[in-house]
Length: 250
Image (cartoon, rainbow, N blue to C red; front, top):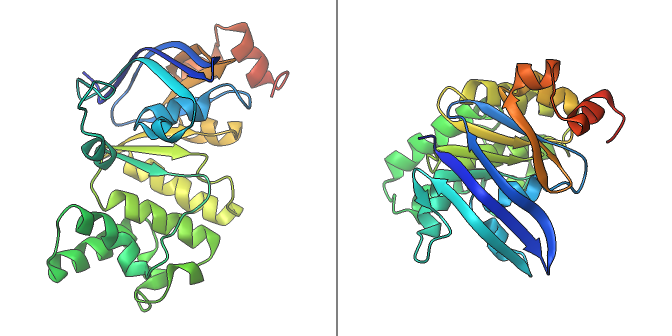
């Protein structure tokens, strides 16, 4: 069974249906692009995968999200353990108000790592993994807020990877970045899928075409189509998918 299996997932906001009866399995070790018009349920779907939807006032969730075979919406589910498995990279970089070093070390410390030697290694390894080490190695103890927006997003990637998740959830992670910084992030994703399952919400169709191995297309809260990227790009079966890919709807 894959890391993520969704069954009959329905989400309502104060009675309005945002996701309607979604059932899908996310392939392991691939980049799954979640695409569709604005307001179609992409981010809602992503937020359901690590229960961040819990923080949305008025949201009501039914159905199942199985992570490694366990329904995360069961009573007594380990939400802290879940979020360790499911790293999140948001649209806007959210560097913590502390040093570069402490940003990356934050998660491991939270989960009990105290050894300075181990933390040094974690910080170094994950800054390298996110292509940031060469730019910040001589100023690790300066405030993260002094980094550029693109560097802060790569720092957030390093921070997310430092807790050794199984899955990376990415919500339009390059939307606020300049083209060069976006290219850095995209390159990392291609390398990281060797070790992680990546679920990428993107409104940039060109980016989805560059990166996706598998595609979920949402339309009006429904999972209208999903399948291997090549199949969806070259022979979409749903009329709404066809219209979206042709630019007739956006």
